[in-house]
Image (cartoon, rainbow, N blue to C red; front, side):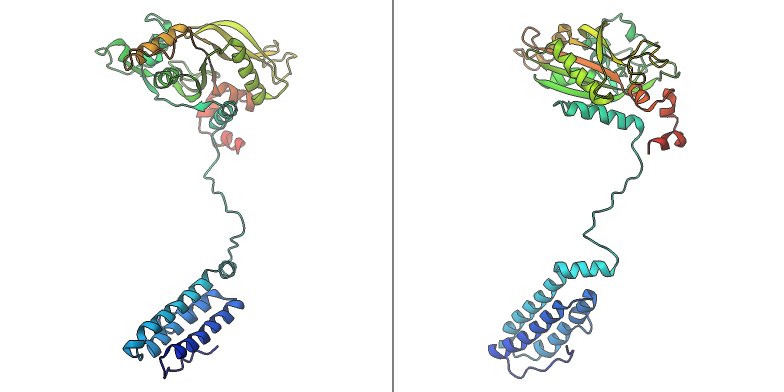
Amino acid sequence: MSDEITPLHSFDDASLDTAFTTLADEVRTETDSLSDPEAFRLHWLGRKQGRLKLISEAWLKSAPPEAKKALGIRFNQLKQQIEAALEAPTAVATKSAVHGIDITLPGTVRSPGIPHPLLSTMHEVVSVFHHLGYSTNLGPQVESDFYNFEALNFPPNHPARDTQDTLVIANQQSRPSRDRLLMRTHTSPVQIRTMIAQAPPVRIVIPGKVHRNDAADATHSPIFHQIEGLCVDTNITFSDLKGTLDHAMKALFGSDVKTRFFPSFFPFTEPSADVQISCIFCGGKGCRKCKHSGWIELLGCGMVDPAVFAAVTAERRKINPADDAYNSEKITGFAFGMGVERIAMMLHGVSDIGHFYSGDMRFLEQFA
């Protein structure tokens, strides 16, 4: 390999082909034994003493006008050959190795921290229902009375509407009752919003933060998280509800867990039920955590009350007076809801709900 540039005395096509073929052979020879791509680049493409720079000065400037085009074409072809050699996988891998980087290794995942135990529990529960074909819907935390209570069959004098139970937004007295704003007390308003916007079939799971005017203690907090679900379609029965929740509890707590249902009451479902699971700590034998009953109450559920479908239909008919998508004689559905904190406390053996909100790194580092 020589850096000396031999002057061209003839600029016909044959002479140019011979000169540039010789240079192309030099590039090919160096490429075959390439060990330092950066030195190769500087040797050929260096801005001051690179061979292409010298060739341009020695040949292009001295070429007659009629030969400049043919010489320029061959010059650009040589430059492209050099750049292609530098971009070849062998050259890239060699360059990476020189700089201490092995590009064949998988990339490093940068994680700024760990998911909060409440978020990881929420994601785990939601994932179970995603596998059952449910999608996730979200909604605002500041809700109107209509979505939070009225459409869910809470009558005006229901205790849940009392300010002792509900955090209301100030200066709402001048608004119509249904438009008054409050902090949502459950994620159920998203069920109403979804049904108003979407005709059946509906299968959604709704995770989110809710607010109630509760005094904080070991098991209660004025801010907590819920996961609710809604399934609406033709021929949905209570058996479908039982099968869905039984599968979900087994997916969360293990295949040995049993479920049982007890009659209950919720304004927006009829019939309604409380769901208990066999104690995951004692296997149903009875211990302090299950108060020696062998069972732990975990969530509420029921078949959607026809009054809820009627409220949804009334809203949908404001847009389409003939809408009949949620006729309770044609469709049925079920709903359920569970507290994320309660599940997280069971899964991780946490005795005080306040630990989740304390920001104590000693507590949170246990979940790293």
